[in-house]
Image: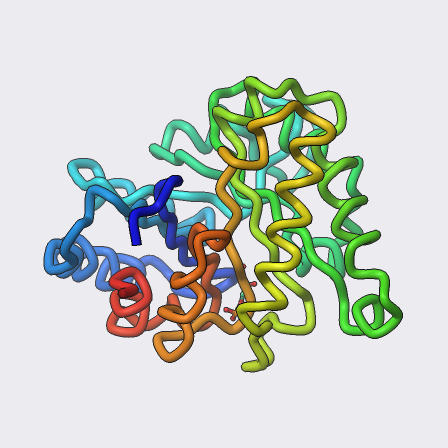
Length: 257
Ligand code: 13P
């Protein structure tokens, strides 16, 4: 299938891997990634913990693999103990930041307003953003999936111009019930929400936005199901948690057919 948007497979390592494990993984990845045919048509990224960014960056300097971070603060500097800013991430060669992940929403009280501020700060600093959206099990069972996704998308992108969305934004649809559970969404379930997000983008940010922004699926993506997801034109890639921690499994996902 000839894709209209460049595919993107990104590993979100969450709170895993110290420096030595990061070194070993990235060292291997840089060598083995070359085995993947059509690499130019795919973007591949990893998001290690902040303390492993330096070591990862040192190995990725001459590689096409994107270094991503798992969060970013909305100010460039200041009295924000424990936070890290966009200019600080850029020093380590970070190209993308993940914002609004459901684990941040669930465990750290992340609101759509905070997500919006992080998106704006990233854009101001010329960092691309992977903005995560998605409903919980209760919300899906209550028939509220589209309402929740709409809130996440529109409030997360409030006040952002179409040009910036086209240039910097990737959306990850990650149904919370599929994250870390082994229970992935079906391709049809993911496609339905991806199409809905594209309509929202067209309606609120201008025609053509929905057809340009890449939308990834995340939630129990693994070597056994990636080809099924990538067979759909509406799924531009995957944000991969657990299965991105093992090099062979991540490479197989990056080498989707
Ligand atoms: P799993 O792939 O472990 O389900 O995690 C998905 C995720 O949260 C990626 O951001």
